[in-house]
Amino acid sequence: MTAPELTAADWIARAATITPSDELFIDGRSRPAASGRTFADIAGRDGSLIAQVAEGDAADVDGAVTAARRAFDDGRWSNRKPAERKRVLLRLADLIRDHVDELALLESLDAGKPIRDTLAVDVPSAATTFQWYAETIDKVYGEVGPTGPDALSLVTREPIGVVAAIVPWNYPLIISAWKLGAALSTGNAVVLKPASQTPLSAIRLAELAVEAGLPAGVLNVVTGPGAVVGSALARHPGVDKVSFTGSTPVGLSLMRDIGETDVKAITLELGGKSPQVVLSDCGDLEAAASAIGWGIFYNGGQTCNAGSRLIVHRSVRQELVERIAALGRELQPGEPLDPATRLGAMVDGSHLEKVLGYVRLGVGEGATVIAGGERVMAETGGFYVPPTILDGVDNGWRVAREEIFGPVLTVTEFEDEADALAIANDTHFGLAAGIWTRDVTKAHRMARAMRAGVVWVNTFDTADITVPFGGFKQSGFGRDKGLHALDGYTQLKTTWFDLTER
Ligand code: NAD
Image (cartoon, rainbow, N blue to C red; front, top):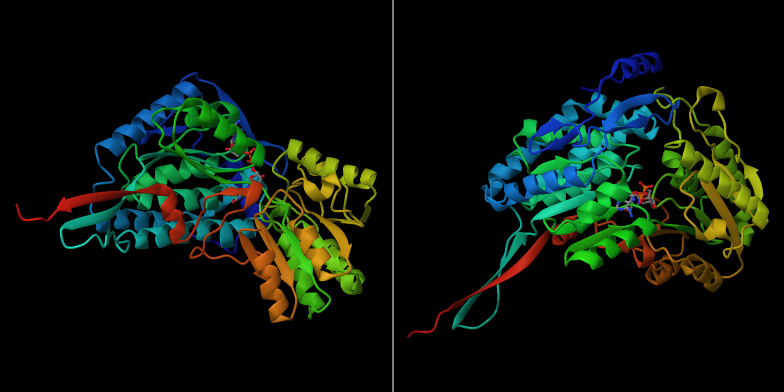
């Protein structure tokens, strides 16, 4: 249950005594890795060890896929009445809400996220996702084809089978819920592979799912290195579908794994370098600065759709950038377990180095750092980067083309609208885009021309489980969220009946 009255000291005391589940979860029970090996799971907030987690490998993947295959093939889940499956997933949503403190703490420790966000956003949003997909189970109908009086043709949706869900570390619980909500509601069995930086909430989620009544084997979790576990899942003949969220290079590697082995479905939710285009008539600059600032600094910029490229008209540039910089200075990182903290840590030391390396690269390319740019709070042992703004960036530079995945905003100026659109679309990513203008015609025209899966107008990063999310171009294909996500976990079957008199 929620305990909003807990102080930073209370949360830190809880963190010191927590003993998270740290084993694989296969066929309804916890077990160590077949090899007996473990890996260190480190907290971004202070570099301390949270747990030694089971290091799965191809043998464990085989065990998990075999369990999932058996669970799918004998129909223990897929053949249950829709109303029964709905009850189980609704119970899981309730259990997630009942365990909000525990799950929020695991997520904050693993990912370095502020506890106020994991309590108020990550955990409740995961519960809402399961509830929403549970409620679709007995509301999605099949079709009867218009095939004439002599035939009856039924078009039914069937689960794909065994789904490998491979998820990243930036929103571990939320992204797992998107995939599991859609996959389980449609009757599939799943092997979930969390990122090695953030394995704990996935393991706990699988335990709660069994407590909610999900039959053994329907949801399995294998932790371990991505190149071993993720790749073994993609290559396993018992897996029918890979649903991946992560970086573009790993998405490409998974397509190679599948291409070299067999035919299976894949959806890819990949990286981004989303533009925020601010026109001269954007109106309330303070509101725009706040949304643009939060759109890059929230979660330490470790967000796939972060608005990381500000493309701003010359006439409003100075005032807007000053306001965003003021927000950045106010939003200094702090102890993630302090409920007052709005900006937490980078997920780990190597990611911190990557982000700072990009700041140095930007300076070398000619950018001016007008906020942040240096590591802070190093004395904690944690990995903190303050909001950083790189001004005077040319869209051809690497800092404007590659995903930094930190709280780093690049600023590029434009003179006319056509230039703005060309700069915004001049990227190999296509996940999201923002447009700021009071002119409704311009807004529609630009939104239509943006090559991105999500376009926000006069807002940024607003989200709801009812609408799909996913990218164009190198940001991937397929969609999470909304009813459209169900397409990725089902296949259509056409069944003909001959009605002619014989
Ligand atoms: P990542 O690609 O390094 O890892 C993602 C997952 O893949 C992890 O579970 C990892 O263990 C596994 N993996 C790593 N190497 C693998 C391999 N060779 N074969 C199979 N699996 C492998 O990504 P990350 O660093 O965890 O997350 C950040 C990335 O995720 C960013 O690029 C971000 O934009 C992207 N992301 C995209 C979305 C979206 O919806 N489009 C959402 C969140 C994050």
